[in-house]
Amino acid sequence: MTIENYVILRNKKLTEKTFELTIDAPELARLSEPGQFCNIKVSGELIPLLRRPFSISQVSGTEVTFMIAVTGTGTGILAKKQTGDELNVLGPLGKGFGIDDTFETAILIAGGIGVAPFPFLINKLKEQGKEIILFNGARNSAELIKLNFENELNSTDDGSAGLKGNVIDLLHANRKLFVNKNVKVFGCGPHPMLKALQDYCSTGNLNCEISVESNMACGFGICQGCPVHSASEDKYYLICKDGPVFNSRDIIL
Amino acid sequence: MSELDFTVKIGNKLTLKNPVMLASGTVGYGNEISEFLDLSEIGAIVTKSISLKPRKGNPPQRVVETTGGMLNAIGLANVGVEKFISEKLPFLEKVNSTLICNIAASSVEEYTECVKILDKYKIIKGFEINVSCPNVKDGGLIFGNNLEAVAGITEKVRVVTEKPVIIKLSPNVSNIAEFAKVAKERGADAVSAINTLVGTAFDIYTRRPKIKNITGGLSGPAIKPVALAKVFEISRNVDIPIIGIGGISKWEDAIEFMIAGASAFQLGTINFVNPKAAKEILEGVKNYCLQNNIKEISGLTGSYEL
Ligand SMILES: Cc1cc2nc3c(=O)[nH]c(=O)nc-3n(C[C@H](O)[C@H](O)[C@H](O)COP(=O)(O)OP(=O)(O)OC[C@H]3O[C@@H](n4cnc5c(N)ncnc54)[C@H](O)[C@@H]3O)c2cc1C
Ligand SMILES: Cc1cc2nc3c(=O)[nH]c(=O)nc-3n(C[C@H](O)[C@H](O)[C@H](O)COP(=O)(O)O)c2cc1C
Ligand code: FES
Image (cartoon, rainbow over all chains, first blue to last red; front, side):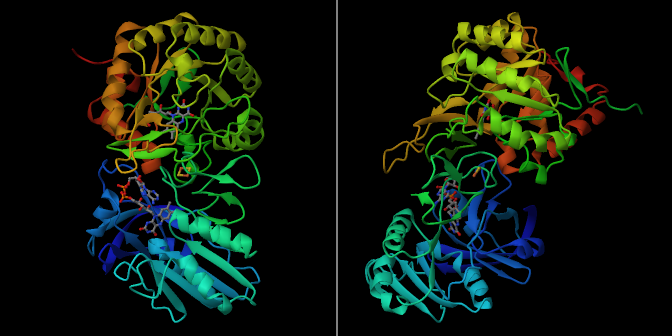
């Protein structure tokens, strides 16, 4: 865990509402694992007050990239950042994806901006020699953030790109790609998508990890602001510390 | 040049190496924030409220940002006194910081029971009694805005410990000085003020409250003027040491609290934004003293000119 001001190297527009911010952050790059996140102070002002959590989207050499969708004040401020501006970043935080198990095929499921942590995950999975299939869905083609990964399938709610339907429909339609394989599923996206994925994987008895969101105040375990209920005990986990990645069997969404 | 005397006395029994304290519920039990902050350099750390039995806390969402502040309804989620002793105290013993245990309870007996259990641990240098949590149905504010209840709790807790007792007051009352007065009369060594203000926020599209508990406690820079006025009100009316809390985000804020009457001050919400804030504010306060020829920091307390 580090807290540092970093220089922004690039702000690259992806779609109308999404962009990638890349910072030069050697120590952060060295410590980061796929699925972990950083808590970013969007400005030096007291309004907005709290940091904003973002998944680590890619690490390349000493560079760390975040993929961000504009949804409110804080992300709006970040969208205007330019090369050379500074960014105060706390991270890496939380527990990331488990990629050391014995599975052969990684199935990645992304809904909307939920694709953010996957470029980094894909790199690490490739290093391990795993087969990877990415199911990537969005509302429409304009909002779809394609990773242009060789094994990527898309869906959109309105059918303007890929399969018409949601990403769970897409997964179901392509079952033949993985039914007889030793797979592990990794999911990130909006709450309803994660719930549907949880159901799908529990019915199909698939090992699945999901990255969960919650409002956060601190991001590193001191405020108790980010609970998610345990599936096995009468207690809450903290999303920022025990997650944001959980085995889908372990939590109640 | 003579050395600056940075120590502050809170009543007769508690001396801190400096006036910077970390507020209850905003630093857990110290371990996470110690990665950013040398806790031995800080005046004191106040634990998350501890109750006799573990508390699970409220369902999500528990926190939401508001303009210049935040609402929280954590619901006193904590490990309970037993696990605090076995799992959290060993770390706190190592860091060599002045440790104050904050206690929350839903009955007078639970307060005294908790204090009795913790009293034998030498490393615990005092108790802050939370009679002012707005986010639990039992206890909390039900005590905090009832003079008799605060009097009763203070009196009973006083009997079971020789260590300093600090009563943490609620701002959600019309006359906070009355509460400070009662605390003093029943034997409290100091009061801390303020806990959070009751507030709420609605999502205008779903028309639902933004936090599950409907109301939460407002904290952060937005509450500073209120907190300062409460501290000032106590300081003008009651002769009891005050620990100022509420919206401190920079050293200038801290100085303001001392001028208004605080002997020491606590940092809360700012720890979430800048975990190194305590050290930076300590430095700022030191520089202010040096530049203004202040030899003893305690001389600032209640030094307002009207
Ligand atoms: C672990 C984690 C990883 C995330 N990764 C990404 C990512 O890679 N890319 C991305 O675009 N977004 C990500 N998010 C969501 C992102 O944090 C929010 O979109 C962002 O905080 C909104 O801030 P705002 O000021 O623009 O919105 P506002 O609505 O103005 O924010 C108000 C408050 O609500 C909080 N908030 C609002 N929406 C969310 C949300 N969905 N999750 C958490 N807090 C929220 C904000 O932090 C802030 O405190 C992630 C969230 C979490 C918890
Ligand atoms: C998330 C959160 C949790 C808190 N938990 C407690 C608690 O357990 N016990 C307590 O006495 N005060 C608690 N407080 C109140 C703070 O100690 C402090 O009185 C208040 O936040 C005002 O200070 P600030 O504006 O600097 O945050 C909590 C505050 C926040 C923001
Ligand atoms: S966000 Fe503070 S504990 Fe998780």
